[in-house]
Length: 431
Image (cartoon, rainbow, N blue to C red; front, side):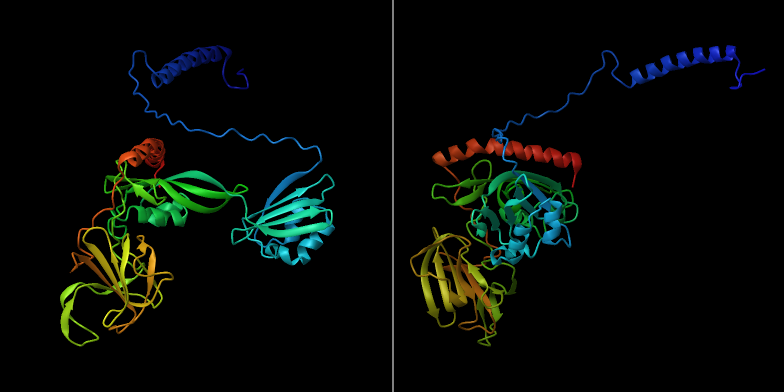
């Protein structure tokens, strides 16, 4: 009679021997997929990144029973619900927060934001901190005379953050995919605008890496700061930029060799606009109703739109001229000058002889002089001869030199190492 398993004891012995042999064979197969003797192993590429880390602050253990708690605001939350989750058992504090005018910032709780309170051993509220929408902080403290609510400027911590991504559809889609703040994305496009046309030159597979500042209050992000270093690989060509403060305190972005990435002049003195009339030697003038040369470019924009200086220079002339209306002429270094006409008004403090920086607002779009609609008439002159600002090869700003170049090149390797780290992340993970 066969055992319940349906296999004789002799057969079971044979199966055990077969199982042992099979196990040995399988072990050999596993070993074959491991490392065979005398086999060559491809070396693993490694990179050493050294960073200075601040020593952690060690908080002393409090013996008075007080401690801070934090709770995130949920959609639909009321202040009472948040305080209940925080375990606050203090009717006096709740009444103060609901009735005091200085605590009105708590009436509109924003989901995702943090509310922090300090309680004592009896669950009474000792202090409260909440970051308001305008960046200020609401501070509520218990005093001997009762509660005191006030708005204070919070202490801000600045941290460096690293993001890297591959462009598969658009720059903003790639940036959003890795959590890059919009303000940093805009800075990124501005930094490389002299080398890359982000409207026409972007390609699928382009990559960027950026090291930037992020401001925090009590561990909560409140806004992005400046780009410290960035790399953009466009159509296989890498472009890199590093932030530097010059001797006069002006910030700028430079290549690894100290070359200034900023062009000496902006192509357009007005942001987000369209061209209504280009540079031409024969154009029908809409105001004079005759054919004549148009040795400038007209940018249409609503009245009051800020007009920026195209480059660093000194205001050579400011006033009203018949055809130009309200006009500003800026003399730049060398043979270059620029003209801005039909302005509705001049910027506050603008006068002849003052020094202006590239991007500084010098006036506002208008319709003064011979103009049929609000627009900026802009001229770019070389030796006082008008040239087409949209096609002329613009000179770059001055590079770093001397001691500034030495100090600059000493700081680049650390930031360049972080860019390399981010580049490796992008290659490994994509967008």
